[in-house]
Image (cartoon, rainbow, N blue to C red; front, side, top):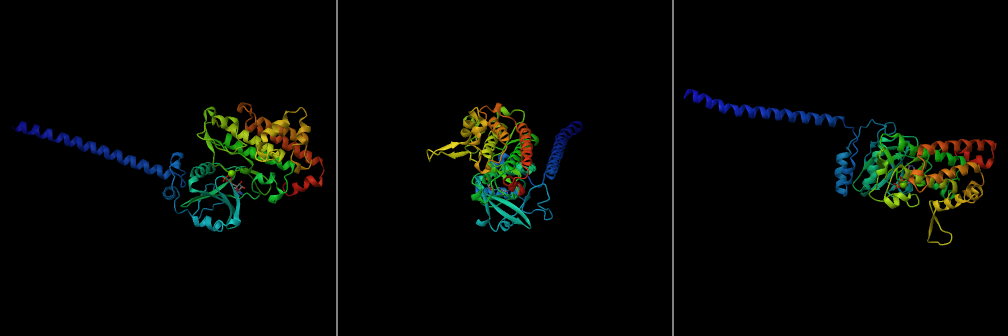
Length: 407
Ligand SMILES: Nc1ncnc2c1ncn2[C@@H]1O[C@H](COP(=O)(O)OP(=O)(O)O)[C@@H](O)[C@H]1O
Ligand SMILES: [Mg+2]
């Protein structure tokens, strides 16, 4: 009996030992997981930019409020100077409202497809605030995500952002001279002097450098997808910066061939045939659009021009350039197409060279288009030759009148 009793006892203890060991192991695992999670959280930067998938789930105003509380901490560290830090700052609604006199109409400096842009002041600093409808959260986050990471002299700088019930706000450095488009198309009506030839070659180089940077020199490779003259801004010295990254797309550097968009985006007059026909999109789509920008710099015309014969019809600048380029006598045919506001003050050989680059960028086959880095080196030669040409004029009043104030 005694033996039987002791064996009964042994059978009763074993399951208890097993149960206790299992629960100890489970508790240990739980505590390790919690610790790891806490550690990861503490390593995250203060400003967390949500991933694409999360962004797409922001359809209604109420979810914007939730988003704000999740991704936009209500307080920012007060001693951070928004103009010194490399990181974008989170502004309160009051701050963006105060800076822009509550988005006063008089402060409106621009309007694009995604929002109105207002001039603002924070202390003595000038800023530009883009106010976007909350429904444009996809474009807002696309721009935020890229500009948080990309800092370059030829890319507009993002200072910070803010979120409200119905609107989202992007706060940029203010670029004094507005968009290149305003300086090329009816500049006098918009209060600008026409750009000189050397100012144009400098602007072409600056914009090319900004685009080359996002294609070749950032960790991820980006396609801007909306390169056009209204998205190139000019500072006080007429140096250019690429802006408006609302349609930017990250592409694989190694496998560009396989990148297809889910919908057609961009601006008519700047879209390459492969994007229109097959939604195909690579860095060469930006090169094509840049070809149109060069054509605008040469001709002063818009990407889509009203037809002289039929009022309701538009003609593309690409067609006009191809026609001028087809002839054997490029110089004489170009002279009819060059921007009349240049008043014959240009070195025709350099204009021909720039036209040839523009036409290569506008090749039907993306493989025939140059890369931005190649364009950059060709442009710098044209710019240097143009400066030499200008110097050889020995201070001709007409040409230099613009150069003095940066033109
Ligand atoms: N940082 C800035 N400084 C000065 N003007 C700006 C700035 N950002 C935008 N603008 C003006 O506002 C216009 C629209 O801005 P953009 O970023 O292109 O908006 P959208 O995404 O709506 O097209 C530009 O063409 C330009 O005239
Ligand atoms: Mg724009």
